[in-house]
Length: 354
Image (tube, rainbow, N blue to C red):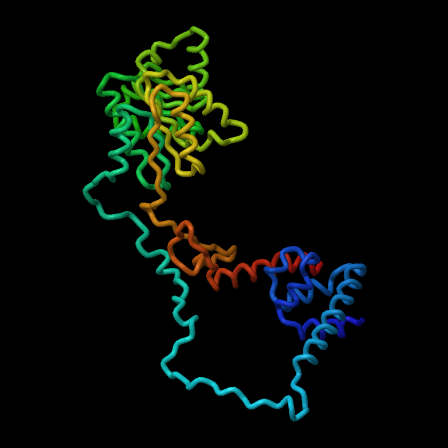
């Protein structure tokens, strides 16, 4: 079969039929348009090309046979009176007409910026977390931007007021440095210290910022008999980004930190992405002398939106809708699909033509 003959047959097929033929032959064929897909099919190696031609001929034969079966017979007995159509309703709308139009770039960016200053009122779950920490361990598993840091700050204030030591841990030294500066402004530089692999400042402060590995090592020393004085007065341990407990390599650090944590200290675990917080709370309850209280919800205080930036500088919304809501399906924005197809044509298509 010549190229012209194969091109003629492929062009007569629908895009859906072309994708069916390309399945297993062309990588990510579902992202290609009709003309681009035909070019890629024509460029297949000779062995694959021969099998493709056989499949094309077979599909044409099946299509012709199906058309012959569906064709109306010329015998008088097969002639039927045409069905009456329902009366035309001029005001009836097509079901697709109810679909809202895709969001525009100005609509996507609407409301972004520095918000107006307002009086802060803690959410009920924040107050609940601070109250529960007086008698139980607490896991706070809520979306990003919901206000987990407020719980940590209020719990720290309560512990320092009782002259108890507070340890705040994070998985990254950069995050520990950020929290050190933030808490120094809130509680005074003389009350805050930092212990990481690179820094050791004000190590006897009542509020210590450190990486989780550093705390685990301190607890190791305490378990071996070398009790650190700070652990005797430890009242609160805050494990930020506690979803790291599921990390294949570093998760054991969080497990051992929780297991060796002094019984008189309360544990506060903060995270936005724990997949099974109820199981983690049950585990803490089983190994700790006090129960663990779980606070978990999926309500985002800050809306989540998505955009697509083309290498040329063109920007468009990623989805048809403005806000990204968990549990709902998403449809890509028409302009994003066009820009993505254009980018693939300019990159992948260029490589295939060489």
